[in-house]
Amino acid sequence: MKTVVIAAWLAAELAHLPGSRAPGETRQEYVDRAGQIATALAEEATPFANGSGWTSTELAAAGAVIWYSETLLDKRIQAGEQHPVWNQDHGLARCGMQLHSSGIVPQDVWARLVGQGADSTHLCAQYGLRVIVAQARQCGVFSGVRADRNRVAKTFASYASGGKCVPGDRDWKRADLWLKMMAKRPDHEKKVLPGYRRVGPAEVPPSVKKEADIVVANLGPGGYTTGAKFPMDKWMLLVEKHAEGKVGVSVFVKENM
Image (spheres, rainbow, N blue to C red):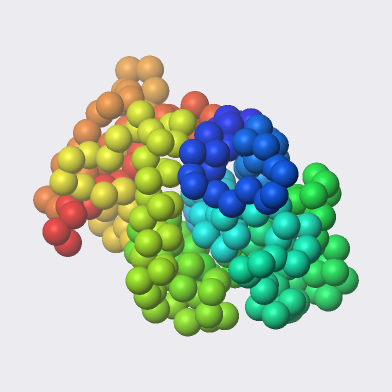
């Protein structure tokens, strides 16, 4: 999906949430900032979505949830200004993603995170997403799988705690907000099969993968086309359009597994 489409979707989602406007900021200025943040997240998520883990849509939405949940999009926090309520971890956290200096966020980068300009906003988005991906990998919920409520909640918990992948109430609430956003994503016409959930490569057993490979080998003119289904006991293979309009085989498993 094009980043401009993802950005427009996220901007609309963020603009509808009850955010925090700084004194003197108009509603339109707030909406414009939400659009700038959405664009940065959509563009910076692309390099991390290489087909082996979460999609750019899933990543950008996760970044948007953290940015919103941590700051309510208040421009004073992004600018590094004093706020009457939030102390930004007593000055240790910076920008909308509330990033600390770490091995992932070097001190020289951390020092440049604040500011209202496009460069600072993109830097905050880029390194915030770096931390999200690192924490998802640490929790074992990134490589070879797609994002879902459980995996996102674990990632949010690790993001907030610095490595503990055990979600609390706050993390589940954030995961639910992520789900609501994803329900309105531009490609949502691709419905999950009733009673099944989509699975990633790491969850597919060899026997199912073997059958999927046979279907793949028979795609195209004279063979299987979009919409073809192949039930296999607790599994289901579905031929559908993937990224960039390419036709491929998706694997689903019954929800009660």
